[in-house]
Amino acid sequence: MKTIGILGGTFNPIHYGHLRMAQELADDLHMDTIRFIPAANPPHKNAVAISAEHRASMVGLAIGNNPHFMLDKRELNRNGTSYTIDTLLSLRAELGNETSLTLFMGSDAFTQFNTWHRWQEILQHCHIALVQRPHTNKNQAGNPLPKILEDFLHAHYTENGEDLQSSAAGYITMRQVTALDISSTAIRAAFKQHVSTRYLMPDSVIDYIKSHQLYK
Ligand code: ATP
Ligand code: MG
Image (tube, rainbow, N blue to C red):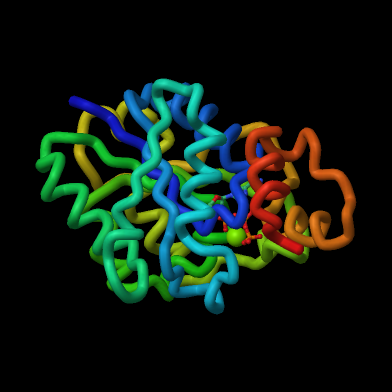
């Protein structure tokens, strides 16, 4: 079965936390391709000042030299709020039901998963691979999991990566990746304060931000 990883996010901007997590999960779970899917209008964030086109361009630059990574702009081609369930249905319509899809997610995103639009349907269309994000107040990684998600996690949990390769959807797994305490929030603040962001993100993305005068 073909195996595809999906990393959705605002990517405002993309950084090595995203890239390294995607690479390690891809290796660990033997994925053929990872699709980076920037959210056009993310439901959980106030209107994002940087356009979706800029955020997608930065993703494109960051992943450009990795043949296993691809930029998927389907959420930019839809109007309204960017819901993951719609993205999964659109991927299924394109790829069919015989492909294994795995949504990558940091622990901070998962603690709010039960607030996502039609969240209980999501696992019918993909697996979920969770990674621990280093604890900081900024990204809420320290929040405990609500009971409803605790139960959801246990009902679908597997430690065996092969389960995700041999079926199309339905499992949740947790994997260890190198802990990188990097966030877009901290990077945006650094640009504002004229503090260097080198080695937190690719130089190509830093150059793009400077030439387009983003995060001023
Ligand atoms: P912001 O600070 O603006 O929220 P962010 O750094 O959290 O940005 P997002 O685009 O919100 O980046 O994250 C997209 C996905 O990547 C989420 O599932 C998030 O948990 C995960 N992620 C982001 N940064 C890291 C990191 N350093 N390590 C592991 N996962 C990460
Ligand atoms: Mg975030």
